[in-house]
Amino acid sequence: MHPAYSVLFFTCASGAGYGLLIWLAGLGALGLVPDGTVFNVIGLGLALALITFGLLSSTYHLGRPERAWRAFSQWRTSWLSREGVAAVATYVPAGAMGLGVLFGAQDKAWWSLAAWLSAAGALATVWCTGQIYATLKTIRAWSRPIVPPLYVVLALATGAVLLCLLLAVFGALGTVHVWLAAAFLALAWVMKAAYWTGIDSERRALTAGDATGLGRFGGVVRQVEAPHTQANYVMREMGYHVARKHAERLRQLAVLLTFLLPILGVFVALILGPPMDLVLLIVATASAVCGVLVERWLFFAEAEHVSMLYYGSKAA
Amino acid sequence: MTSLPTHTQKKLGLVIDLDTCVGCQACATSCKEWNNGGYSAPLSDEEPYGADPFGAWLNRVHTYEVSDGVGEAGVASPSRTVHFPRSCLHCETPACVTVCPTGASYKRSEDGIVLVDPETCIGCKLCSWACPYGAREYDYQHGVMKKCTLCVDRIYNETLEPEDRVPACVRACPTGARHFGDLGDPASDVSKLVAERAGYDLMPELGYRPVNKYLPPRARHHEPAAVPAPSDTTAQAGDATISDRFFSWADRLLSR
Image (cartoon, rainbow over all chains, first blue to last red; front, side, top):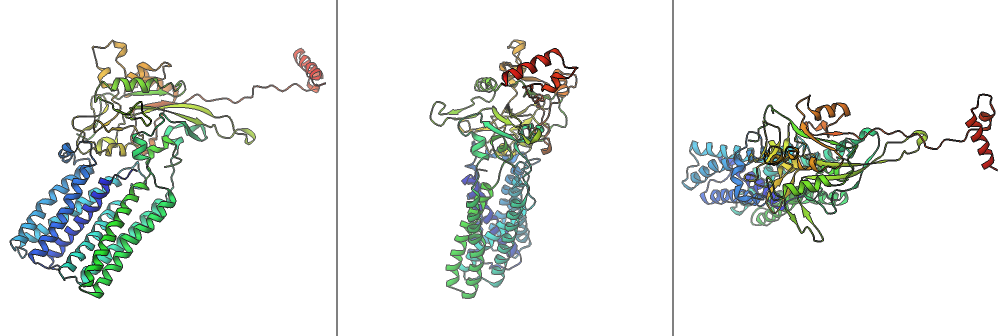
């Protein structure tokens, strides 16, 4: 599948933003992050800026961005529509949280309620993103139950790295934050490794013989002439595929940048303490951002679409 | 609305005969011609006469080599060429419709035709990802998704002659390899054709229940054309016919 940059930026930026929002809301309600106005305003501002930047970026993927509002209507059947509804709905409690922070109302019960609703909305939005991919039976590598939880855990892991960076800026990085970030990075690593093992070992049972129904003659079906001399939309969009040996290298790079370096970074930052923790967390965050972009690019480039069987693909 | 109708009064669709299709592309070009001016027009091309032409087409004709497997004594039998037109199959449970976030993709309850409303499509392309048959093509100029309309603007068009009220591809086919009708009615000509010729669905295991059907190429027989010369023993036996004796004599003569 062709990795559209707008979709990569959207899922990575919004993912990290929703992750950060969940931590600020959840840990804020539990009193595990500082309750200072400046910290929370900057934190919420960063989370909402990332979310908004990502959502706006996703509209660049559209042929008719001015009609994007129509996408809120089909939540009964469409996960893309549900994602849009959940994303917009999450702004309401998140906005209430922000107002509560500005007016110093974090000890009020309604603030806790707004925080938990924000966290739930953010979780639901990222879950919907994962479901958009997981419900496409046409793409074997995406149609897997691990895909939605993987999107959620990656959002929580990248959000936790951002939270650590933010806390280091305010000199408030604690053991609990580092362990949370490390735990979710490690969990995401395990799940991503399981995902890769899964897509590598799955039998690709469908052939051109199945796609055309001509396999009934017992032989091999091979395209001898395409309908056109140049690549068409279907080939550009569904036929994009990364070479196997490059995919191996890129997987290693994704693991190094997304998981290994940030895990090391948060622990060393905790050990060294200020002011060196800030430097380490800037590096860890930059690494995680680059890593998750590679991971997301691979998610597309490694995914094969069943329609390519008509265009000469061996199996799907 | 992207919720699917529970029942459609008709199941209009195509039956494509792979035995008689000659791969002439008349269906593809007439489709392009009609739909560049009909419902959801334009059907844009980019640099149609340039070095790298690109455009949206709703019907594409592939050509496949189909080997009949390994014949007797392990000798591969000759393969056959099958021309394979491919367009939207107007599935009964199309995922391209249910994934649509705007309701622009819909399945008509009256005749089962799957359409895209070009006025409300946002061009997110998710429907094309959901289609296993590669039937939807995005129009970069128009910014919306394009697909076979089953010539909805022809089949009910009373300003056309009755014989023209069929999809453009069906009207254009010079070998009669394309048939149009109600596949939900077991008494219709197309349904009878499908029953007689063992018409089949493309990738039924995926569960989208295509309405369009394909008729398989006829079974082939691989009897060798060359008849071996009768042996002398056959020819000299008492029950050998006069022609056996003649060919045996000719064989001996030619073998000198």
